Image (tube, rainbow over all chains, first blue to last red; front, side, top):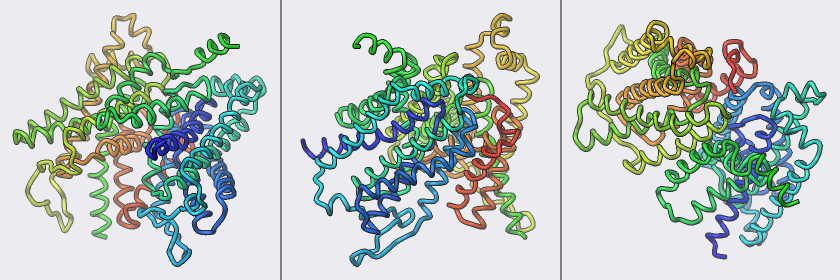
Length: 295
Length: 289
């Protein structure tokens, strides 16, 4: 594989974590415009720990995921009771706040004679753990996909379980679920924590792949894209968001056919697709049909 | 003291541009109960079309205003056909994501036609600002404020006095009954959407002409500011949109003066977040799914 292909594939993997994070919330009935914030938290936290304090990447990733989960809980606690658009706007506001805080964050430390660390709008350079430890791009790609496979396995298991059914129930009709004895608040907080951790993991991997992050990476465009990926791919299975990412980044950016017209083609296709399938390609009914067919 | 007064004045004028943006936004939301994310990009396309006409034929201000309003309305109608008409019964999320997809499309269309980062836009008024007891007052700002008030009054008249407005309100309250009474619901939606987009186009033209430039940020800026002002004032309410816009303008002008531009945006979003979390009554009474 050439470097370009490896780069595209790695990007698909990284963004998939964010799309899965948006998907998890959508399944539980919440639309978030702000998952990019936790992606950013992961990227900054992971980068600070490895590049400034010399932590090993796996440990830094775990710490960043914890932080991502806590951050999303913090945002979720006062807002998860809001409905629909109100929740979406609250998450948008919190994510933009986070982005501006990244712009205001100047926190540097001298490592090997160079100042390393977030430098406001100038961004955060020198997140070189992967490079310094001799991890080849192809190996990093394997790591990203191994983690993604792990996350997916977790999702597929969840969706076959009772808890998965409960989550879908909460997403369909929270009042009805509450009447049936489901603790809706606890359910949603759990989902929020998991979504935050997932997004943060994607962020850590993104920062160490790019070696450089800046606040602009985590603007609203990224968040709405991940929401769109989940919806294009379909809300019936966790493979849906992945399909969405592959369609956008893989088929369009990767093929380089529509250079310059990519968004015109993609935007129109997505709008038409949603007319035909408002809950995505792999929606609940299709997944059900596929299951009956192949089991 | 004079600074405080000047900032308040600037905030009011800035706020009137937000109010204009929010009026179009809230009209769409009030009638369709849907958020149109490509509201801003449609405005951007309209302003880019006007800029293009200015560069190509040196069209005058009135012609530019007409082009901006017309093109924004056309772009809005396109968005309505593709994103909102098919999703009237089904999920709001699909409509919103579809409108985001068209956002990408409209923005790329505009930047393909005019790829530079900044284009000059002819000024609304070339003279110096007026001076009142040491306070400077830009003529553009007065026009903007006047336009916001006029549009709000006109909308009120249309919705509460004109035949079309009765149809709109009937469709909002009882879509089925309205249909039975012979009102075409899809047509009402379409016309409301076009009207809202025309207001957006006018707002965009005034904003471009008072900033004397257009940039590719115009689309996202308009959507975010319009959304923020609409949310602050309460969804789907006309006076709320004006109040929200003016409040946002005042807040921004003062916080920028005291704390700088980054703090300005931070404070606006923090306020929105806190008000939502506190579930203040005027913001969360209307159902939004």
